[in-house]
Length: 156
Image 1 (cartoon, one colour):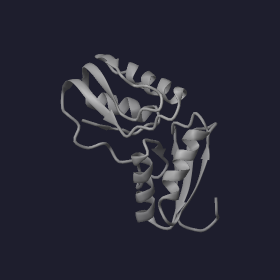
Image 2: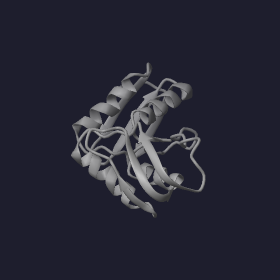
Image 3: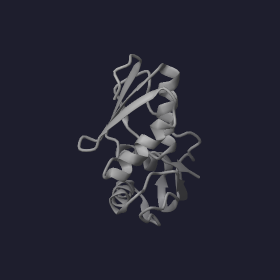
Image 4: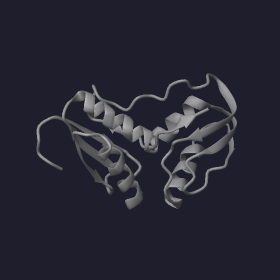
């Protein structure tokens, strides 16, 4: 990582099980001009320096769009919450945009799903970024479980 001054953000608990995950994070961050980054796969951290807060926000949004989530050490620059979640219990949700490059990613996704009360099944498979979750469960609880496992996703 370069030593230029700017806004630094460190994200913890990002899902980084393999080099494919690291490469996907780096690709997402390299898509934003003015960002230097580094991943520590062992610790599950992503650290980046951006030219300014606006650029840092763009980097966080790029990571979310790539299917990753992390807890920020910068209270002014955190991952955005998923908007437009169905309220109450749902019977089925289509999940999309989640990072899922290999079998261990899929295992982590299924592990997160298993923590949600009321889920009875899912169609997640390795390398599939879109799948369905079924049961009688809270969409917000599902997103919270994905976030806790280091993933970001959209639901409908």
